[in-house]
Length: 170
Image 1: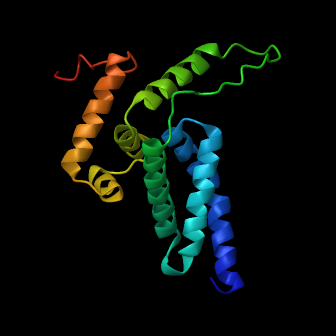
Image 2: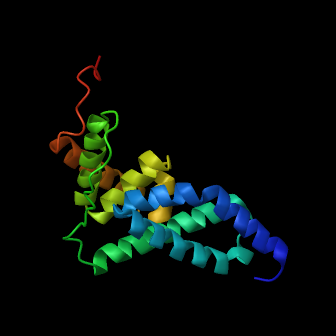
Image 3: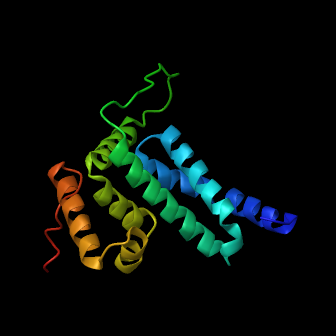
């Protein structure tokens, strides 16, 4: 990449999108440290390809796709049996335990899903992508996206995180 204008544009992109990319990475990996590593590696690849990207929207899509592919590759290669916790005593504060408990249950349920199902849920409900956009990002058919989403939601229902809407048919 030549020129300081391109470097400034990339720096502005990172400043504007870094927090969102880390949140997406966290949802994909279930670990803040891994999420930050994932984002850093994806941003390095984005920086190397910056000259080919025409707009910031393309850069965000490119970075997100890179993150997904890397996260799915990591899940295939690495053993994920242990999840370190840092259960340190905290100072007394207002009781937010029900919110924290729910977030932990959701995080564990997401972590228990196969990587493809997890990626579909993150893209659909966090990134708000359409089924066609998800299929393009993951390199699969829209039918595969629908079935992965359906299986993932069924697993979350089985874990008690989602309930069927009994008023749906009215």
